[in-house]
Length: 267
Image (tube, rainbow, N blue to C red; front, side, top):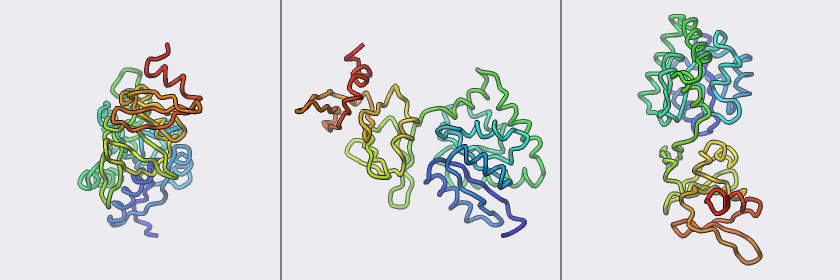
């Protein structure tokens, strides 16, 4: 252990995102990764127990979000923070002034280097007190302000999903996804004639997709509602949806009525 190393905690519920940050940090001199955390509850404990110098903190996590973590720890007790977010359409001005920096997924190596450099400089200059004040402003912002809008981004919906293909990270816009199906510990994103494999749980994706656009019609299937061409009743009383591209997916009987409401068949 290098006593002069920058002690960094990574908090992100996506395994690929954590690995991406870990790989980038591994290239840096005088950096020690003290932990990798995948949820807000564990993040609170790790920040208190490990006392890192710097936290890369995912804003959008199911359950306790990054903003919730800051609120639980308290602005004055938070280490230097770099927010990580997938939602650049929100009012990110508050993140920019409340934290040392923020990274919008997917970010490139140069953008990461800039954020880390800013963090090192702020920590070396002992600017954490000023950062605490700015974080407190973010937490205390009244509804309707840019800061409040940014905090609300923590509960926003996915607009794109990063997938790894042959050692590269590809970004799939959510609006292009026809359906999502479970495949063991993975999910498959069906986009036209292509299928992308992502290590994620169906429940997590369901919580992070806009329910006005996507519906979970089966324990192993989520479909985009505007891609549904027909609801089919099959032999034996089973149901299925046929998408406009001709592909079919099963529908749980317990979800049939809700699906019919979603597509306007039932009031």
